[in-house]
Image (spheres, one colour):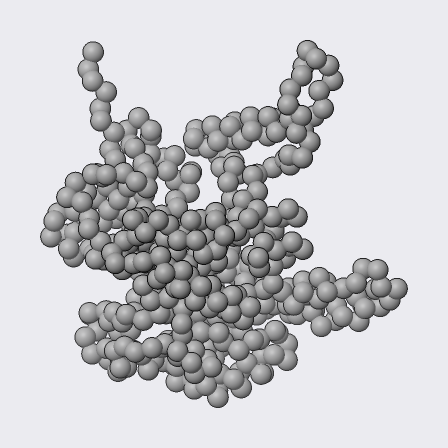
Length: 456
């Protein structure tokens, strides 16, 4: 009898969907975050620049479009191919663009805040609702003009969806591919510049990489310029507006004009044009102060079933989730006699397991602080914390904090990388948490739960 083939070892450096990993058959692939001598590396945002990539690696794949976090040239010299997955999340991004337009057009964030602040016991509740709802009427998307900059896979899907909603679409992409042109709806009007899109659109959506290739800002047009600075996606719009010739006063005038019919807060991002022109330096926020960190937030859940489709792995997930639900329901049901006696746990709740599933993180220089919190549940799970030094640990393998201990509790000094001390970890964690709290208050909505766990 022939020996079973040795499975390929795949080192997974970031959180990857279970439905994605399920496409690697367990009898042929071994996946994990702690594997040694991997045959391949699978990652999302982990930065491999400066990381020691084992000689055993034969391929690197990114679950995303860009490869700027992967040393492609170095790996090519080793004969290691680098793969990416452009367009894999195109439909999800399209839906988020539509959601953003609906939120803006119908003033939904402000309307939700208005409803949350209502006193349901007030005797004049009906009058307050009638008087207040007039401010949130907004506009219909039908008949409005959407400007799409970048007509790749995502841009074409957004344009098609907008047309189906009755919108006019103005598109700009000087480098449009033949495949994209074929998939682009005929109703899309062609713009000749970004400035033309900005002048003619009520809504604008950007689906382009931030590569400065204009002669004025980068004479080496075919050599993308990389600047080491704390930038964020919220800097795209202020920077593109600056490139198009709009100064701060013009942007503020446009915002005030838009405020007459829409909720239009000042742009939170930074104009990166001075940084691009000088080749480096600090990023200055709208307040003129150097940016101390970049905030980002996301959500995750566990025990949720995978979508039910033709994939046999997803069917198995549904079956496993059904077993989980049945087991919980049995424990919640009081035993009727000794013959069917079982542990009785009425406090259990049906559905997915509550966990600190909301992620709020701050990247500041070489440091990254992450808070996993549960603001959505009536009985929220306790916060969990992670802190990484990305220069010493670029793949985020060593959490410098005891994740479920009181904040900030450093791990044992013997486990700290480089010359870090427990005092260093405590000091940086406290400084970054202060900045994280500040940016949360300035940029994000309050926790929706009546029992927020993140303020302890």
